[in-house]
Image (tube, rainbow, N blue to C red):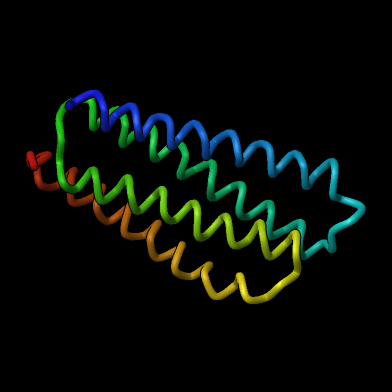
Length: 130
């Protein structure tokens, strides 16, 4: 079981990294004449946050390969859910201009913060097993 969680988090990080690069490039090159400057900024913000958290998911994968820990599971899920809700809502807001997606963005940001707090917990608790 030790390697399965780490593979999951590695795949989640790689998928989010792929999406971050693809959306950033698509907006910068394919949509720069079609989207308002504010919408382009939303995509830039979303892809930047998604890339950083893709890297954080890869760190979770590396740490999870040492053994299971509840804090790592919480961190991983916080980062993954945060990427989906935060970055995903900003991408959709930029592409559709439907403001309803903005309601979800703070929830995603909160999930990202939960991920970081759980990583702090893991670091300070001496990597407790779960």
